Image (cartoon, rainbow, N blue to C red):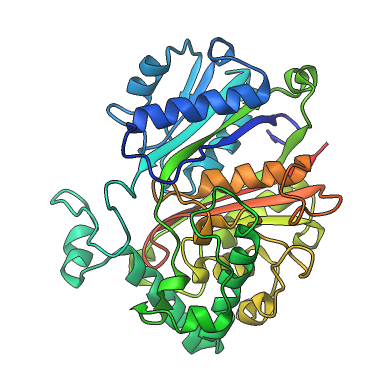
Length: 388
């Protein structure tokens, strides 16, 4: 069964706060849900499907469904890290196509900034986690896992810190127009490479922001979407994949996007060259470069040259990306950026992005996410969205 044309995104909302010491995580979920429903012209009583991941507090979906007062026919709590919410859109479309629900709500929220949860401290290893005996002794943290991938890419393909810096330059060029962005300064290549080294070869400005906040999406049947009289954003294709250690046969030169991307493009019936706008998960600059290669926007090993010289800047480059400033400058709620990738893709397709970064005649967009540790095990979700 294909989901091509079987579902539309009719509501999208990004919580405006970047620090919320006075709000609970459940409250941020609820406020995000309310914003997306208002955007769609719907209410909580219309929702019959709910999707969330492990950022949902308490008993997850059980707690949030009760907190929101939902009356549902379908629930999905798929967890693939920061890519979960991209996968949720795909699963919502599948559930709608199968008749399991008509109007799906997807929420994300967190208080990582208020709770000082960054990527430079050891992960929460426990005795029953299968990875723990093999990785905990070596002090794996988020940033050094991604730095390992960056170092390998530089060694194997000659990628430079200056090339990676161009990704931050593009993100910051866009973020200056976003009033809610955490970082609104425009950075240069020199600013990035001269910022403090966090984990060689990644500098501080190669890393994403840490924020509170959240976001939500509403996915419905096309018939319902047309009645709501909102710009139609149709799910045209989707793919998901997980990459692990492969029994010790580790290859850091590619990500799970190399599998999820082709699945999505094949279902959508389009090629990377057809894409007008790209929302690419940007926990670190290397995260973007790897996904661009694996999705087929350039050849493997040539990502450094592809992102250089402003090629990702709207109105200037060949492939406008993350026009809200992305996780590198705007927002990375709960350390999980997949939700905001879909939200900005929806804005672009609706023609609702800031005029300074709006892609002219934007018809096809990709939203791509990585969740977990790119240097160890991670999930990937790819969505192809179309303005109908």
